[in-house]
Image (cartoon, rainbow over all chains, first blue to last red; front, side):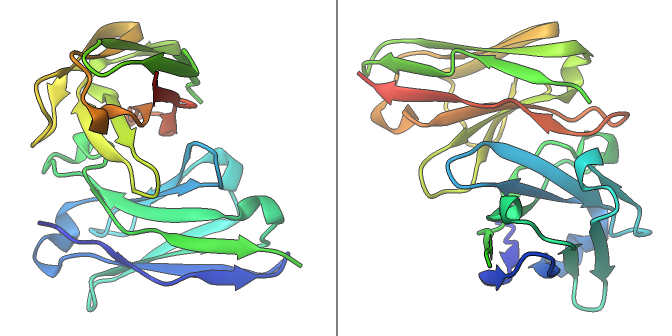
Length: 123
Length: 109
C-alpha cells in the first residue's frame, strides 16, 4: 500500500507563506505526478496543482497563479508545495495525492492520498 | 476551466434503495478523464470510478457509472450504511486544469 506522509498542522498570519511537504515512496517516486488538493472547512475539493517528479514540470489552477510553487527533492522523495501571500480564505486541509496508473496522461485521477495538512490563516 | 455541476446537492435515501447522482460538464469531456470520489466525514476522498466507468481496485460492484460528452452518472445500487457520504465528480483532461464538482451529499433517510 502506497503511503503519502504529509507535514503537520500550520498556523499562519495573513500575508505569510506556508510550505507543506509530502513524502512519497522512493521506489516509484519519479513514475507518478503528485497533485495537491485542498478542502476548506465544510466545503468541496479544489485542485491546487501538480508536479512531475521526473523533470519538475508543474501545472496549477489559474486561481493560484503567482502564489503557488511546487518543488521536489529526489534524495528524500519529498514534494513541497509553497503558497504565498496567504489570506484567511486559504484556511483548509491540503492533501497531496497520486494516481495508481503508470500512464502519465491518466494520472489525473487520485488513488492514494496523504493524511492532509491543516493550514489555518488568521490574524 | 471546465465547470462540473453535480445534482442534486443532497439526496436522502434509505439503506437498500438505489442512488443516482449526476455530473454535468460545461463543455464536452473525453470519458477517459472523468472520475468519481466518495468522501466520508474526517477522511480523505477515495476514488471509486475512473475513465467514466472503470471501478477502482477494491470498489464494490454496487457502484457503477456511465456517461459521455457532458453528462455523467454514478449509480449506487442497494445502498449500504457505509455508502452515506459526499460524492464528487472530477475531470482530469490533460489539456485543461483539473476541476471537481461541488459534491452531492447522500444522507440516510
